Length: 315
Image (cartoon, rainbow, N blue to C red; front, side):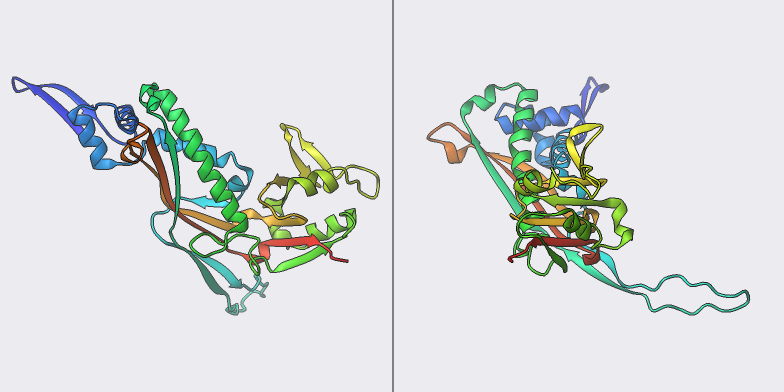
């Protein structure tokens, strides 16, 4: 929205209220706080209703700090989306000079992602109106982004596929399965897990497990020569690699379970990026305001050959 002011038929000022402008950002946040806006600011905010670009970037940045979310293939494509997936592909073949090549019977399947609703509400007292705009933005991003992050993380792992994404641990989602030693994971178990997926997926492969299994059994493991199989990342000591593959330690992972493979083959799409609205009427008696973040998204594993799942043996 572009607002122009004229005085005595002469151009005096031009103010831009595009979603990526500082003017729109300030007006949007002040409107959420319930502060008074000028007529031009209110017109711009009402016409767009979109989160300012810089604020949205802050939310997305916080989501991408999550190791699991950063590992999957996350997109922001409006509406439903369909991904093609190779189902039967023949290798390239050598042919003699002057000899015609034979067509191969390659086939493609597909997965479709819908738009399931994700909502989080936060209530805060009337003192929110007294915050400065930067302080309010920081509070809003932290509270809402953290809740969205937790919901998306859990959905990628444990989603049922009914009115929510299909998680990796849903029965039948990962078809390559195995078990490791009941009494405690051994080096040979670890090697079996790493060998379970084709080499073409190893360049982008990671291992995901919960905190108890990683710190209790994997972290102190040694190979046949007595060398530790886990080393800290040289650039980030809080991160670990298992035989060269990054580790994702996630509390949403089921106990006694390891998932290994190329997590980029899990597709998660935000059909509609998060929107934020405020409602003071629900807190009329207390003087509080409720803020609601709502997004539309879906996720599913595209290539089942890219991942494997190992669980503790029962005997």
